[in-house]
Length: 313
Image 1 (cartoon, rainbow, N blue to C red):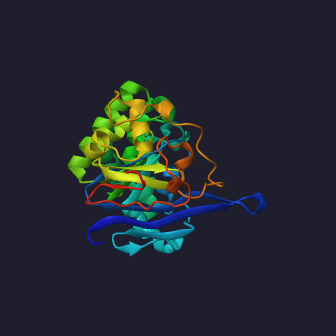
Image 2: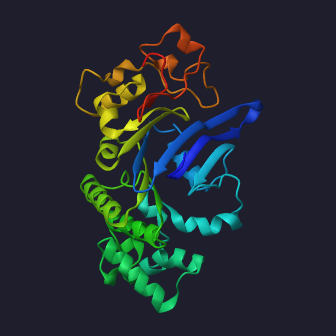
Image 3: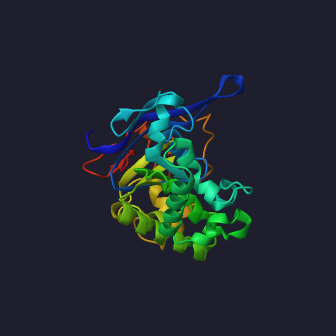
């Protein structure tokens, strides 16, 4: 489709294991992001959402599928060809404490992408870093501080400043607040919303926290065992979820509603990604499964902007 900043089709990541088994961490994911949009990718730990984040940025190579960024398929590009594109795509990791080198000052950390890309050095770099700190709400005096002198929220703001250094078009946020105190989480989320509005950023927001996604995203895609099972506008998904897994997720973290199942309705555990069952991969845990679900794998389909992969939806 035209007009997409990022479009992913059939994205896959497989890992060979002993005994000839194959772990399908990401198994045929389709995503589309237009400029200025915020898409939340949610699911339980191990569902593959963080792997999708790394694949989209080509931090790891895909096993299959297309990754079209600004109209160009980058799935098979080498590092030399990727280098200029990395200016337009950046990531903010989950843990700001481990994301910053303890031996480098704030200035050195934030200036690193400027130096690597060769866009500015010396006094020009210092001026740019000072401006970036101002954008994220930190004073110039922080330039020469070390990570151990900063709070968790201040460290994450430094990480955000570093990600913004090259004025990217796409920002991937991989659980950016989960390692922070609850009070600090709210501040960072509000700040990310302000940044998106003022800079026109596009977000791929990875999270297990549905309440956070509801606050900061326009659309949400729900992952289960390496594949997206439901995708649509945030308010539509939260008001009228159609996939039984989505209903269970929402029912487990938000106030009960008739359209959502309680967490206890899900039996068993998530299967191993190296032993994905035939048919619908959610069928072994699904409280409304039918005979067809055990043999036929439903495709993600629907009318308009709301799509679901479920025979009973």
